[in-house]
Length: 296
Image 1 (cartoon, rainbow, N blue to C red):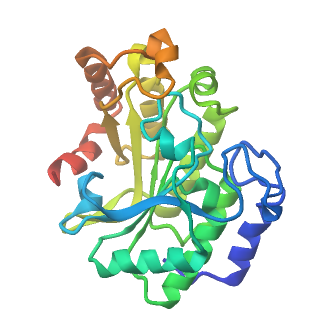
Image 2: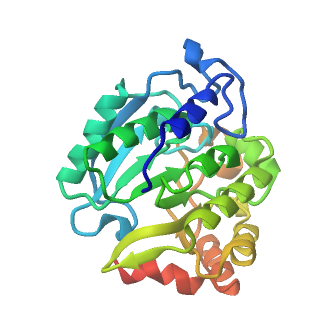
């Protein structure tokens, strides 16, 4: 992580009024306490923080990933498994000084990284806290664990600050993205964001089983090919790199508002998951995916 200049923090805070931290660009004045479409206001809100052992193996290692779960999300998935946090804002407000102390506490516990879960609504406050933690000796990698619906303008300001990007690539088309996650112009946004992330940090670098830098993409398989896995993998292989690590996830189950949609109201089948894995292999991404398997 490079030294964080005050200008970067100021430039990020400027994006809060009117708010344009994400492609949604809802335009509220969060500096004056207005609440964005995501639910976030000015004071950063977290749900919890701890040594997390449920993340991908290269992040967890022996001592766990130093995970901070932020409240609210700019992506409104009807099937969100953490909807009480992401949609309802379960949690508590903390100051940027408190957040810096949490980061240092996680490093002191031996965590291999600071894992920022759903950071998008809170980037200015997070970077301000990172700067203060950096002054106190923070030295472990920083993970940007996000929904993938990101602003390239914001990402460019994060260049050199974020070591590992871990975005979701949820859909291969705008229609399903709009219907199930309320994300306008999703495909253009997510592909532009992934290109910028890859430009900054490249392929995942792992040393002695621990991720140090790079991009790790998550893709959740949905019923009835709703996620368009094939198109997602084709983009990753052709536009990023065949060495991009992709975690193809099978843990979908109908929760939150998914039961309102017949096509989402069941778990995925073995055949649906296997079809997604075959698509991964067809585009030559299976070799990179073994990075995850190798370190389990």
